[in-house]
Length: 204
Image 1 (cartoon, one colour):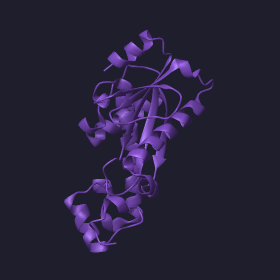
Image 2: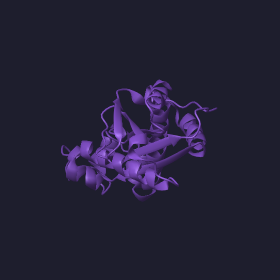
Image 3: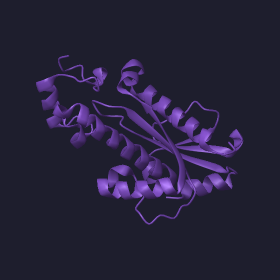
């Protein structure tokens, strides 16, 4: 899980930023990107691809990661997803997360000393070296940490939205297209939280 971090250090990069997103596929809610600079590579909790962890494991890892990192998130809501499409929305969320992260550092490093380790299909328009790694959330500790932060924060947002729109069950499925969720849409129609471009086959 540290091959890419070690390679980046050998190549002269001083600041290694892991980046991942959560929420590319749901029918409702935002896409959330996270950017993480790990201050330590030692964890007692399991830090891995967030999809491989249980909710309890993610929560434990999240608490430890935020203590041992600098991090920030970028959030693009369902309106942005509908306006520009999910790929562009994820791209915008990535750049927002990285810019916020750099703004939190006491002394932002020179661009040439920064490398972004991006999971899979993600990209960035910022002036930093970027390396896209297929399956990066299972191959890079920094990306795995970012995947956990993005997933936990998005899930917690959906739990809050569940209180506003309790008829849809967002706290259970987090906006993904489960059978229960589709049944709820059929019964109640679309909420303001739903991505219209993802729900064209439902009556609005």
